[in-house]
Amino acid sequence: MTQLLAIRSDLPSLDAVLDTRAASSPHSIAFVAGSDRLTYGELRGEVQLLGATLFAAGVNKGDRVALLLPSGLDFVR
Picture 1: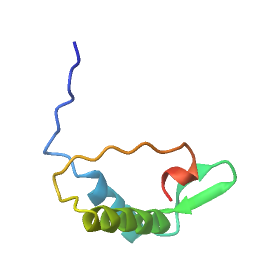
Picture 2 (picture 1 turned 45 degrees about the horizontal axis):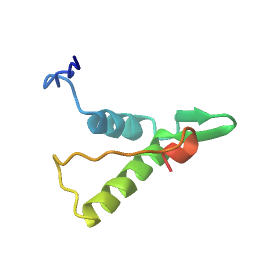
Picture 3 (picture 1 turned 180 degrees about the vertical axis):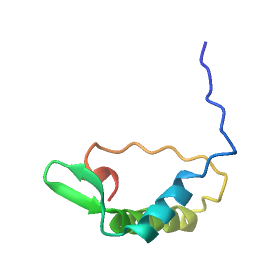
Picture 4 (picture 1 turned 30 degrees about the vertical axis):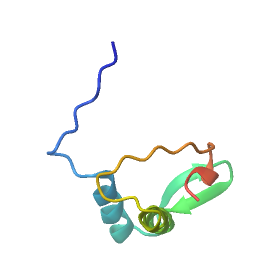
């Protein structure tokens, strides 16, 4: 039987955690894939671009979206 994980409302969202980290340490490394690096500021920019792209495609807050992406830095770019 499949069990679903309960969403804890007392924890901040991943988006909120990323915003906080990008604001406080935008040049700190957030992602490493081989010799490629991405800072928290750059990651936040990529997340904002993805969000804007999904919104333009008709996806709204609360909608579920499935992504199938390769491993590595291409995953976030």
